[in-house]
Image (cartoon, each protein chain N blue to C red):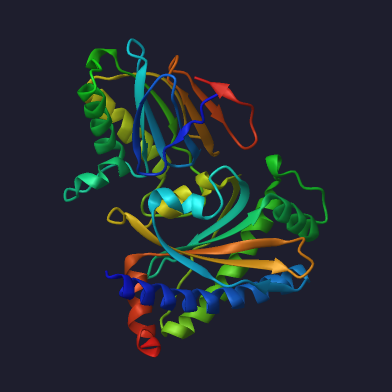
Length: 203
Length: 160
């Protein structure tokens, strides 16, 4: 892929993720009863070893909710919340004190539900965009080092991939006390469909 | 103190004391640390997947446990390490999202299994490991004595 083509591909994927994350952030805002804004989506083509550093480093403790698509098109979407935001959100939802080191079953369930809602609204928006049905599998959540959270999403991209396209959209509360991001890792087949369906509009 | 050199996913590194190597945030990935105490030299491969496909370039060897381990052994031997002196420690292979139903099942356990199998084939001794479970680990490899310090998000540090 030439530089110019790569630039075009990233531009299309960015547009795709913007639409999805905009819808997801609206749903999350309603759930949390606060106003959220999305920052500009950034998109990059990276070797596997660089993804965690691009997101701020392997050692940060984060809450990660991961879901995979289970239809013909496979891809993973990860919702990532920094420690403080995860605590704030869980305390708001469960009305109890939260210790990330020992989450109760109901708190993990709440985290998964947040991922579920975000992901479904993300998919509703983008499936219209590419006129394709996208079927999510139930999500799972964990709180751990960012590097560890990323391993499975990267591993599921398949054996043939050495460079990944990572798309990252930050959402923030106006007041600034809550933030996080959506990370989309489109697998090859998914990428092809996105480019086929959306490529024309950008020429 | 010397800043440890970071070895990311699908990377391999070889070093000699007083240098240090580290792999940060290991989840389902497996880090294979090899050490020769006589030369105080060693290395690590940070593998993402258990087994390499039939067709692949040499650049991708370090992404897989089976080919990465062989490559690391070759790199060490080419620097004068004796095969019989190599001792191995394994870190990682956790299951971070146990409720995600994937075709590939538990990839952390698969990584660990593939590493063990390959090391057995090569006749290399595994002297210690901190593997499996459901949490991430950061591993710091001290080439002075071959110890690996393991840090997790919510549990106390330990050394193997």
